[in-house]
Image (cartoon, rainbow over all chains, first blue to last red; front, side, top):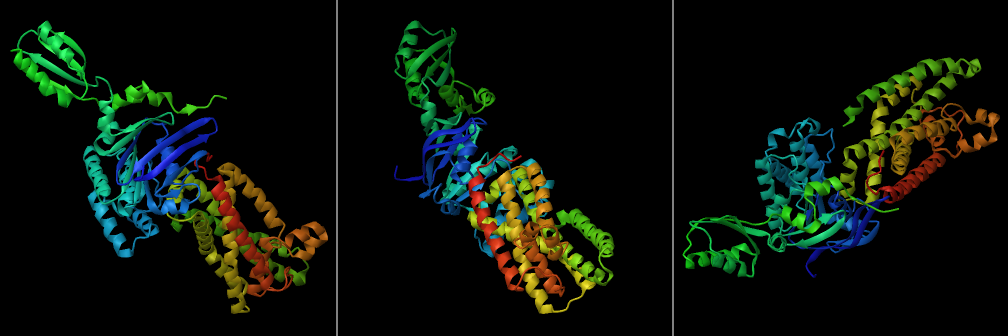
Amino acid sequence: MSDSIISTMDLTKRFEDLVAVDHLNLNIEDGEIFGLLGPNGAGKTTTVLMLTTVIKPTEGNAVVGGFDVKRQPDDVRRLIGICFQEPKILWVSNSWDVLNWHAKVCGLSTQERKTRVKDVLESLNMWSHRQKKVHGLSGGMRKRIEIAKVLIQRPKIAFIDEPTAQIDVIGKHKIWNMIRELRDAGSTIILATNELYEADILSDRVAIMHKGRLMVCDTPKTLKDSIPGGDSVEIQLEKEVTKNVLEKLKAFHEVVDVVNIDPNRLRAYLNNVEEVVPDIMKLFLRSRMPVKSIHVSEPSLDDVFVHYTGLTIEAAEQEGPARRHK
Amino acid sequence: MFLQYKFLIIMRAIWFAAQVAFFGLIASRMVVPELADVYFEYYVAGVVIMMLYSTSVFIGYDIFEEAEHGVFEYLLSLPVSRRELVLGRSIGGGIRSFIFIGPIVAITLFVIGLANPLNFLIAFSALFLFAFGVSGMSITIAVGLKSGDRFDILMGVLNAFIIRLSTTMYPQVFVQDASQLYAALTTINPVTFASDLFRWGVGIEKYLTIAPMPLAPILGLTAFFFAFTFVGVTVYEKRLEGGGWQ
């Protein structure tokens, strides 16, 4: 893929008998928000740490921004910025010092530092807390400081691990918008999260990981559409549905199954619901069966995860990471 | 930043005062009366180097604190090379230890006096290399072991060897009387280089081990600094695989 800004080739990391990442092959395109999804222990954070040169792969390799993570780690680090899952902050400092120091190490000029640190702190509602010692801040505030580092740095490639963990709903929306703005300003964003809704609304493409392995990778829509009968439409009719109409409904090639919930109400499991609903409505109108109400639902990425792993994300978390048989 | 160590600094200052006021004063009475004052000054200068050594080792404990708070991973992700990182930490640790012992050096100068300010400036500047080297050594051992407990124990043992097999507390002529091997080891010990250099700087030129002064100890300390910076970078790159910190 010519536009790939990150490519991994059988990227593997083992910690003794634990296989954290298992022969991962990924291509991430320039300028996209790429969601790396999976339960805790799926290998997302380890993947991020290898791509950011914090830890070395046991096997395989990766190219980040055209540089080999094993042979050119210094060049890789010049392109990246990272928001860690757990805030990594010098605990003795205040918010302003932490961010100003980070911006300085990343090469921002004095004036640029002042402006960006102030703007980002204000946007994250942290300006009034800028002189407080970091260890005196709540978990959510420390997480804001952690994400502020990336937003101030504006790296070519930003790795953001669990961006809104411990953050309130209003804060989440603010951070999501700021991540989109970062992407629009030219950054490629790798978003590691176990919040599937967050990945769904932010990501251009997502990769689902389970036990260190890549299960599937595509756009959220394609993944959701890939579940046979994943969409559903529930129709409440004015009168009892006839056998003839039911047969016609089942004959649509998008329809996988139809269930009669009661004589006047039925639920159809189907693919590409948004394309087929007008035809279904026409069928009922032509058959002189007035529709009282209609409720359409699409699968979520949770359903995609269940489809590809056979487990809910909670059950997968309980299973934990993969271990090698000795 | 330095204030987080205020308890440690105060305790070290008390330790210095106790060493000088009790051990230094009493032990100097054990030597022949005409050399008692010379030994007292000799010992006070040695204690300064012991303090410089022990405060430069602090950086290793910082590494464990950083690993615990995850700051370590953050530092490793920054756009700086591993060499710059190790060098920055060694130099930072060395400068910090100089700030810690600054008041003690001032007290020492007050006790001993200052014969030649230029010699003192040369010696004092060269001692930075010693502090950076010890910091580099401490970082190397901390990263190599990845265990706070083992680090603590090993540094205690190393301290016993590196301080006792140096001329910090006693002149080499007496070491030689005890053992030729011990005497040989004192001549390649960076703590001896630092002690001799500091004594030369403050004008205590009786019983110096290394010659010619000040070139020989400065070269020795330069080699010590570069060796541990190089080893530190190598160990950093080999051992930092993330996790495994105890």
